[in-house]
Amino acid sequence: QVHLVESGGGLAEAGGSLTLSCVASGSVQNIAIMGWYRQGPGKERELVAFIPRFASPKYADSVKGRFTISRDITKNTVYLQMGNLKPEDTAVYYCNAHITVLDDEHDAWGQGTQVTVSS
Image 1 (cartoon, one colour):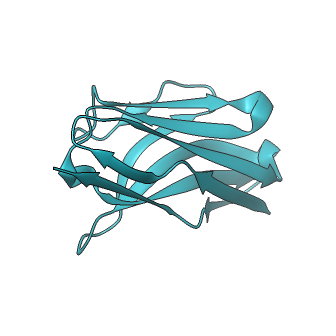
Image 2: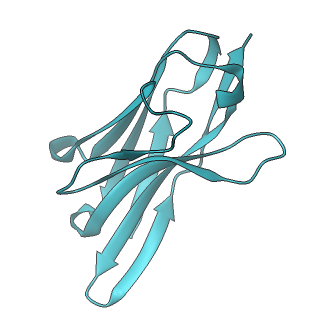
């Protein structure tokens, strides 16, 4: 089992920045990919960015050049640095871990953290 806990959400002004953190615990050795998703008001959950254990990170087009995802394996933590925030970035942000164990693959999710960007 993998347990994820996010922190760092809050209120920011347009053009400002926030950094989200997600700490993983439990069977962290089985985590292949960690990432961030978000769900805005009235919208479906969408991928923001992900970072595999041994590969380069990938970003949604909407956040490229503004957000940076990083992973500290020694701390079992993934970060999302968000810059030049826009009101459309307002959403609940969820940490995700993609877990592989032998022939089984599944996802773990955090509880979500609210990010609100004012114009």
